[in-house]
Image 1 (tube, rainbow, N blue to C red):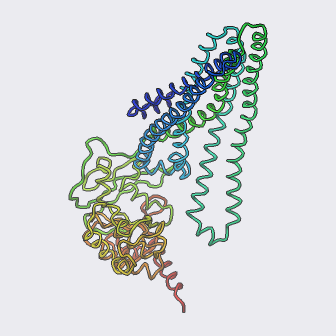
Image 2 (image 1 turned 180 degrees about the vertical axis):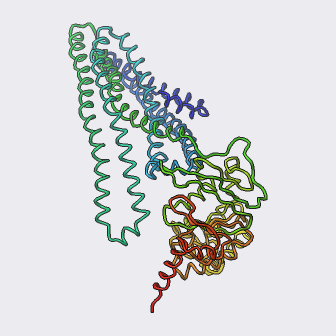
Image 3 (image 1 turned 45 degrees about the horizontal axis):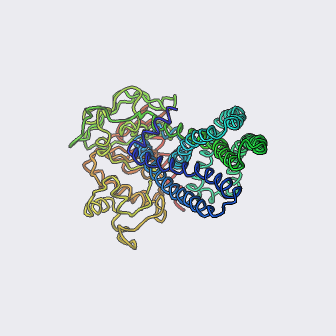
Length: 580
């Protein structure tokens, strides 16, 4: 119920609309409650009394009630659709904002399918609850109270007889709710797996086709889809037992009233019109009770979704700007790692790291996959916090810096170049949305991307496909470089920025980067020794989370250690890659 209270707060701005909607609902129920009374008069005062001249009068009243109810239902539906959409808009906005500010650690744990389901499926289930189930509960309560009051005023004995099956209906509904709750949770989990599988397959469809794994993927999908289907069948199986029982109990009510009421009518205790009207009220009374079965389904579904959504909203943001955070301005680019240890998933990936990079220096950090070199950048940009030790920029601990200020001073060119489905200009200006055309062209020119961009059909306004489909690896990398340079950062990080490119394209990008890094503190993260690495002011070689060698290229070559062996090996690989 705590989740329900929290959800109701999202309707605070729509309180007047909700009240008006409830008034329309009450008026509509009143119309429904009046119809049996009019029907009673038609039977007793017109048909039985054979006063047919009154038939048109009562027919007009019935027509007016039906039209009024239809109009009231229209306004009620519109108002509650409006309020539910507004509430979900606020909830979706909060959810999206929370996800935007979550740390990398959160996304390491959460699957894409689960996150997508929170934003779409779960919110839609909650919207349906606000628009339909919530209103139906209120309508049911009002209908039950009014119907029972009228029934008691008509005949006390028949009224109590109509309540005979209520205890059985209550236990049936309670049993249904108890069984459905864990089932709906399981359905949500299965749906998240299904969504993740589809998203993953579509994103990696080129890899699937490249390896001819369509049949394998189909079988893998069938397994996930079957799990989702079986959970839904399980829920249907539960409902298939309880729903017919509910219908039987409701039908039993009508049979009891018809038999006893018929006997009373024959004995002249009540009129035929009264019996007909009372049966109508029993149906009005029983229908909401029968509908409770469907409501239980919707409520359990909605509460499973509420639990998931509020779980995201309540999740702690581990990496955030502290109070009175420092705003970095006009930095020099002095970087220090002081005795840094970093544990990731219960395993230390950095152990006792001490590095000092002076302003304007170019430093290369080498190592094989898993050596911990990329973790240094994750700590520098504060995507994660060190387990112990400090990371400083211009002698300021990055933990004390406003996050957006910190990251705007660090331009990161990553190994995996992500290009948005937008114009090339928008992709370059992503880090500075208010950038002027001159700034975009300046960054593109500096990245040597201007020539190929201007040859495109729409130039800078050319829309590229999802993830940069239609651009070569080198072109995407140049756009990524321009994007990192748009706000002219003092610190530049190249995180294996050319490792996915062929040697020829890598050489071209390396020449571009020679110009880009001038006057900037530059960190080159790589496992491939390039011209930039050889010319670096200092090189650190990492293994198993520790710095095992450091020095200039010449010093490390004289040492004849791991760097020397790597250099010789890669030199031989390059020589063998060219045809004889």
